[in-house]
Image 1 (cartoon, rainbow, N blue to C red):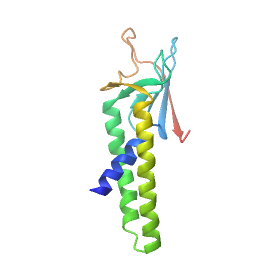
Image 2: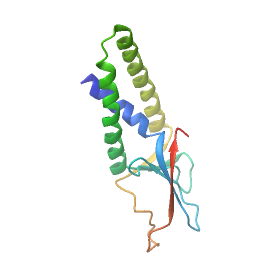
Image 3: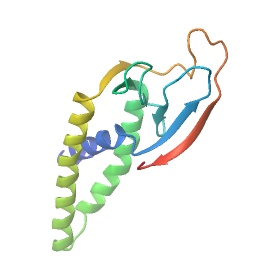
Image 4: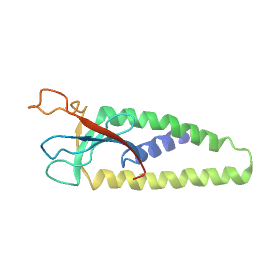
Length: 143
């Protein structure tokens, strides 16, 4: 149970600040926010008005957390199966340190940013756009 909670905590903290993500920049005549998420679109970087706010899309966020949870659970499981005592203690220290840093990141993202929760993004459409927009997708890694 502790392993699962640690995994979820680390996965949420890894997902929210866009450490490993795709960045979608839509080319329009307006100043659109950028969309982020890996492998699913989960949020915008800002709205049109305030730079410390954004939209958090629940469907993409849940999918990304599940995706990263599976990956991180494998790493945590691997660290727990190490037989050598020194490496085992080191692995537990790493897991606890990551959990503490994750709580700090999650609280920062939750209390500093003004997130507006929506279920899903609108396929890069606005109400007055009929066709899909041309959005450029780039991969970002700890940027």
